[in-house]
Length: 197
Image 1 (tube, helix red, strand yellow):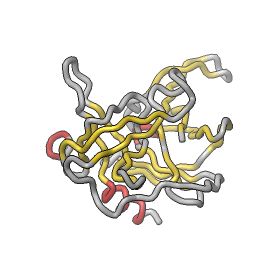
Image 2 (tube, helix red, strand yellow):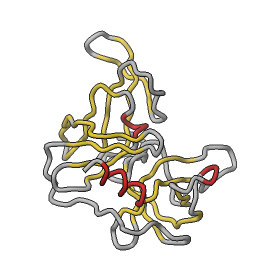
Image 3 (spheres, helix red, strand yellow):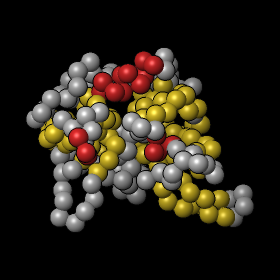
């Protein structure tokens, strides 16, 4: 589910998906970001990227047309993951795959690229796993040619069985370069989730 947040002063760096919005309270501009997240339990646990919520004072999610404030339970700056907790008890949630993606596996990326600028509905892109490592031989990530856009950060990368094999995290943006999109492997997500109960 999509989330919006306001940032306070922090030692952490500014999130990648930030824009400036007007604050009604002080009529000043404050940084805000949006991204994607997804439920991984029927107890309201949500996975997203750390860079989507870094330094946030308030983290809210849009759920069925309502904005709900959530708590940040844990975050991992190095692997760019975060666990949020809401009071929502979803009827359905994503299962994290026990296996990492394999080269040439078909994948679907789901999320909210460009926020509400295009539409409020979830958007998906299809592709395949094109490399089993990320930038600089980072083996906690993999590469896919499924399109990632601003706002997809923190969304699920799903296999044919509907299991989460990764979390959308980054895209190399240079003129003439296409298909360099990265996800965090399910084994890293599973380890992070289990270490935080």
